[in-house]
Length: 438
Ligand code: CA
Image (cartoon, rainbow, N blue to C red; front, top):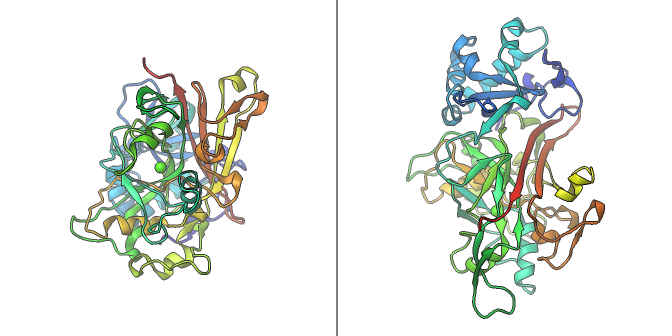
């Protein structure tokens, strides 16, 4: 598990002065990675690191070869068009690169003059999904979400008997992964309208978002081997925001008996910036089960998981409608939750994924499942907030929503805040609903 070190010192400041402003998502203590290029250009994508409102171009930096040793090797990997090579370099190499970047961006660094020319404003950058994602699996790790959704379908027994024992997941679709701010086209599919005898082909009337944490795998494991729980985090590169866009009417008609398919795989979006486990070291949280709940099987149990397996990561969803934009209203927060309330930890998801010998590859993506908290205002989907579409949500300006309408923009944020450490953020994951294609 990554430890708190000199890179987390709250007194550190950067010569990129905007990074020192209170409330910046990207102070020098964060240093998340993305794959970027200048917006509208035909330049190759390459790695970048966020500092204040800038991207430090790791492709250009690698050409200058300012770092030796492991940090230099990791920097060369970060110059590639996708971050798989950096992710597979392993936690020791990425920690060395983080330490070198922290020194180079620090106030008084002798590299300031050379590096200042390698900054690109984030407002002038465009991004791709940080890695070439070979496989994407989506878990269901929030018991509060599982219970709330289960209650809509099975009021008497909302939680199925396997839930508390086995980390539930399905294999998602990597081809439809896109980076923020992708426009999501309202999907068409088979739906069975209430009261109808036969299904029809129609544009979804129940388009929803799911507030999730994405997990990028670092080093993989060989097919036929398992990742023990005590080593799981050595195989994780970092976390991002993930929106598992969902068409609830398509989903509810098709999901039995094999699970999600076309109600989910039309689009999944992620934030461009991947916050490393090293950056998250000061914000870990104990993981436990409430009294009376079954303990995990031993392959999912570990003193480190219990001590600090969780992440104290605040999550929020905002909605920005065409009506709100026309009226000059700010996006409205729909909910807030925290990843520390997850029933399963990241390391448990990784270990469980490989317990049968399934191999994870560098750059594979895992979704945490919708992260809903215990309180009613902490639901990470409209399905929950609207009680299955039965309750309208009142919006500023007098509008109402049960599910998403065309032109609606869904915005996710995440951040960690724990004094005396510097607050760090994940940036933004945004997506706008485009009308169905006739
Ligand atoms: Ca999901």
